[in-house]
Length: 160
Image (cartoon, rainbow, N blue to C red; front, side, top):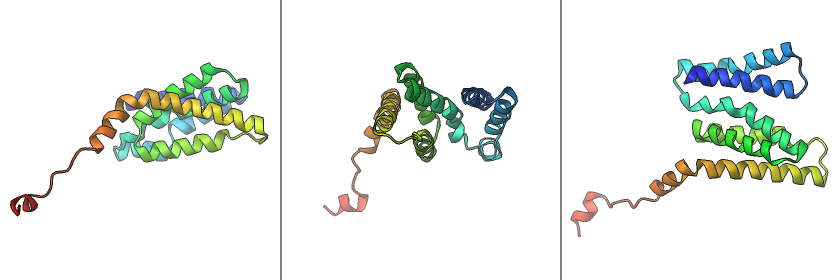
């Protein structure tokens, strides 16, 4: 599973770099650099922190969200939402938070006109809505489990 995610990370990073008009060599360097970054590899292989495996989907989230913002189409946003859902389900909560903040900061339009910011916000909310909908299969049981009633300590029950 780790090897497939590392391979996917490289492919997604290569595709993202190509979408920004990098040449084949530059895109290959970006893909190798992202997929085999020492920090991520240390977490995955040496420390056994497979909760960071979902970061492989980050370039695909960026690619879909940027295409949705640029072209104003729904399909790239849907794809980015699916990729973000896989990122959420494959990561620990703090890594998901960091990735979400990174995606938001990375995709803020350079020209901050009202129209550009509104498109950015609507596309971002669409991506997050799709991801939350797809993650509900895991989020709803987690929310339910966090609301369980706690029993009083044994000493309190005996004193009654």
